[in-house]
Image (cartoon, rainbow, N blue to C red; front, side):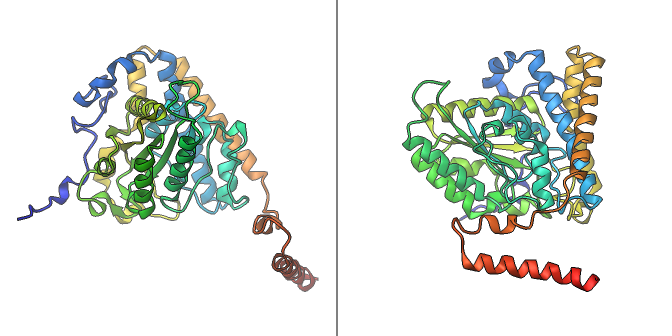
Length: 386
């Protein structure tokens, strides 16, 4: 006889002792039992490292708020906020080595910034001025691949890239300065996509040097995790034979430690790893969404008390961080937000030729015909206005 499934067991909260956590909600250093294997690693973090984590989170939140405002003012077609998910992203991105390749979804704004991508390139994408946003082959972009709005597709891209690393002998050589890994970001909603599961099949089969980094922000637009899965999502990775670790995604230290170990293991040739970062999307799924239609204020408030930035600030203050440091971070945050606003207002419209530029690798009569049609269509408005 099959036991009944308890739907309330579908999502594990960050307070669970089985989840890797170093900081309590109030910022005090209170490692969970699951964090014990990472204690020595975390002990090696200097004050400068911890302050850098905080700076990353605070600056990107200011950028994120500014971008949301720009969309509301008609400057962008769409904006996917990362508000509330900063710790998961900063910790994992800072754990990667320069030679690693990162495959984001579409709200990993701080991941791209840490790796060197100009935040305005994200703005250009969401404004509809570019097909991809930035060139992932440009060294200044830190091996950061472009945003993927098709849910879960980036996991296949990352696994394919990881398979290439295996075939080319770019991992498992025993040289940590040379070996490479990939990390791919996706959400709880994307975890239900077939692409993710197919990617895990091939990753496990070929022992790709890969970390599947799932940001469980509790909602796939308006669908809760309890509807998507009857068991904690990190267990899906284990089903494919890869070690899977649940972590408090609102604890930047925990995210960093778990990601650093997982990437090091994958890079050394031990095969793929999976991480489920338990976090919360404090804002809307995108600016076209209204979360008040499906979430309660009590739920939002319970997660607001776990805010990753407030938590880290309290921890730094307990370690003696100066007010001058926080003032400097605030000044940088305002400067970045103001710079993005100024440069966004200077962008202008789209170059008409861009929509034809990459349809075919060689000149094509159909494209020529479409180009002429558009030119005639636009000219007809000028003639009518005259």
